Length: 615
Ligand SMILES: [Ca+2]
Ligand SMILES: [Ca+2]
Ligand SMILES: [Ca+2]
Image 1 (cartoon, rainbow, N blue to C red):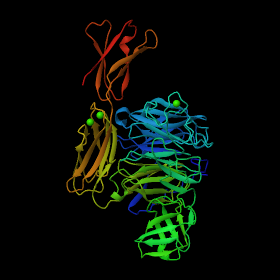
Image 2: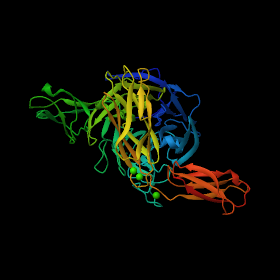
Image 3: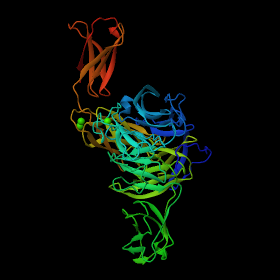
Image 4: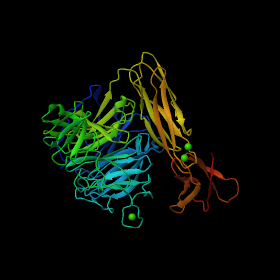
């Protein structure tokens, strides 16, 4: 039984292991302290790595060092077994609103989604967005959290170790992926919304034993969920309303369930036997194998074929197309032949799938871009999956082996891949060793919101002989998206490695569709790179004043102001309707609304308010 973050002994002295592609170099980036549960690079170009620890601390790593004061220490936090601060991710408008979302076990019977607001390096204004999420204070708590391309908050919760919420259950958030608006409210388009009916309206997808991590695919925006398994570790590509089948048997889900895109048997390779006689048939460089019983292999799975009587069938191959229950095909050069016997064996990847991400940077050769990487907590191995145009898995290989306690992974602003170990808190950097100059831009798919600002980063791959000027410009698409800063960057032989920041702004446009634009990153004599930018639509609303509240006589009055993000409103006050109106506060709205304290109102018996839009 795969146990995630169990009570196993620490093996902190062990090295992470070695990337199998010798073109990658691994170094220790930093030590983030014991019991790291998540890592996330601030999407503002600040080069800050936020690290969540199970103990409740969120720390910031900058220039490879831990800042002396934690960003925040979540309290209360409940840290028994697999409980604690389990996940951390950012708002797509983080540069403007500073919102950081966390998934936290707060007691032996409750988990919460908690938001902090970053003010510089400090987390302020702790806000519980969603309370009452299920746990029994032991295992299978889930912990995945993130904001989707639809600007909604998603999280994953497991079966709490006692089959909570499994099967067709729609009342519990156990064994579920949940989805909420960013303020914690229920989106009206969630698939099982029934209002006062018995369904839990947050449910977005179900049937997950322990979704400890998930990741949104940058270009498609699709959600890939890593579900830690009992017999099989499974990675699902999930849509609204899907059921991944738990607690039915894993990897043999019936037709009403989704099946994993990637799976592996916990703690071992798995052997299936090939029929004798005609179990191996090669025609036109495609070999078709028939197994003695259902094999359960998935497209793209890597197999070791051994012992076939005709040895030309033997070797390591990827399942080349969607298999049938007892046959599979692989690409295999060779003369047409028929034979049989032998076996096909899968890879031993580990026993608890964790911490994946897509390689979303130009800081790797094209063959790596857009690949899905994931790790395994028990084996410490990192895996790399390549995907075809319809998200069919083409190959799954080991990327690094020999590590321990892998827990989370992220692409950094320098285009390198970072991964963290749970027990010792070491964060490793795996970087491609370029031998030729090129532009390294990260990410290649930018998700932001209308009226918002975000950042990407650019650096050079190798030391230049002389200064290199890099230009970043919006070259096609919606003109509402523009480079706000960093359109011209200069790299020198001394600073070529340091990521430089490009700020993007998406104008608030008042229509009801999102913006899509392409940026081109270019430099004389070098291949250009393109960045795709998506700004989520923010639909305009009329602006209004209210509610107006006063806690007690003589206290300052609080005034709500609702309007459109990116627009500036001045709140004015008066005591008698007669001119002049005094300007009390000028606000450029970040979200839909803000709350203004009228400190001049104490002891005023009557106060009138109005707002005007300035732009
Ligand atoms: Ca309901
Ligand atoms: Ca719009
Ligand atoms: Ca537009």
